[in-house]
Length: 304
Image 1 (cartoon, one colour):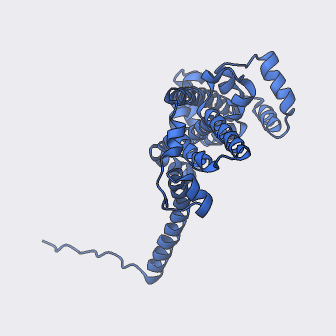
Image 2: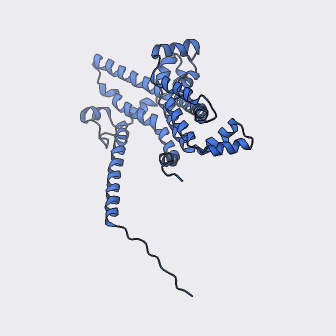
Image 3: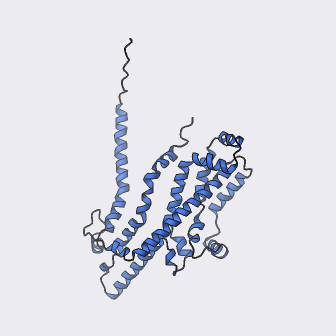
């Protein structure tokens, strides 16, 4: 019986060790630099107004205080309703935005669509040159009647041309042989779109979906334009918190004019507490979509 040949591992060279050490050090420093601002925001939200005005923002609160959160949660029903509006708008807007954007991307990436270049140019041209804010506002309110409704928070930012071009490039990278094979089996365009194109573009859909969700979650501008002051029941989270901050600053200014101590109004910690309240939930999406981001970065880097 022939003896087994033992194959040892290839020793790691000194250059590789030096490169790994430098990479770990650089990435650690960058990670700390990215983490410090968030820790500063979190610490400041639990700080006292007087300590912030006296000593500035610190990583460890000099005087621990919950005044900012108490002020935000004085009316929890309004805050929860604003959360509900934002969650509804984000979920519905992301689903519809992904659906229509991916369908348009499939059509523009299809070789069977004769005028795909002309239509692509139309999308690209309108993303660079617009009619301006006033015509856009008049068109949405007078002709489309986007006013004092949840539709006004969803439809104006439903389609983003940049995301459309990203998905178009993803779908254009799918081999045409897969489409031809599906057509030979009797599949129509909508079936090919659902069962061939969509499953092969999960990385692009996850990335674009997160971008769309962030747009809806952080949007307050449309609420300011299309919602009246009396429709506070439709205020999304960002616009609701912006109103609280504006009112707190007005109260602080009035207190200064009347001779009252401004330290009683926690306007500075409230800014940071609003950031924590507004960004906390959306951060939870990143761990679930991280693998799709990695795949989205490396896709197409290696050709078979």
